[in-house]
Length: 268
Image 1 (cartoon, rainbow, N blue to C red):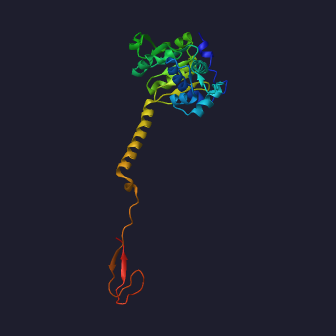
Image 2 (image 1 turned 60 degrees about the vertical axis):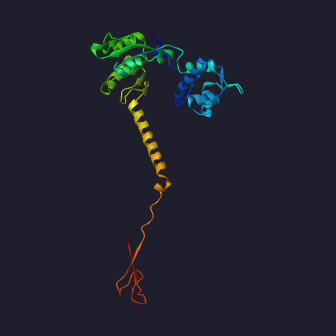
Image 3 (image 1 turned 180 degrees about the vertical axis):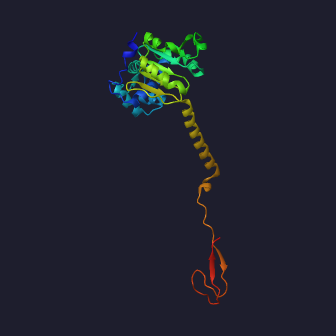
């Protein structure tokens, strides 16, 4: 049962950069869609476009996997699906526990993408006694008092935290102490973990704030375009007003005119 805890993805031992690892799921998603359409091969340009990266970066990423494709043919879709799945550790079963079965936790429990990608929701855990035994997505919720026992019995190495921020660190500490070495954190807080424990943070509010920034910037650019380039032009300097100086006095030149009137320059 504990095999899920001891087996680690091969990416670290092979020295694959973290940036490449982060893109592998994008390639796998695009390749899976091609496989479902029975597409046998794909060029680097086509796959890069489907994954949202440039083709040079894709070819560099695949070189870390030892996959270079065939000139004039491209990459074998099914083989790449297997190769990337193996590198990501998806060719084995990964039991996962979700802690915090509120609206978000319940939605995650019902997410069908876990099972299709090698993740099995082993347990749903919540601190509310009223939730204990209640089925969510066909899985009965268990009380948080049994967290350590559940992790030990199911060999869980991946925990998902969907609790309020105030208790997330406490939950994290218990997960780590029980043997969990990878955590997906949906709580709006930064978790402190020891070396050897990986944390991926998903903060929906931060992502929305970033989108709001881009929307505001686009709105500002559209407003400037509607006003036209003249709205951005430098204002003309104020014109000087020339007024006659009193007879017999000197102006800015310090010289008297023939009739005694000297122009004086006054600011507008």
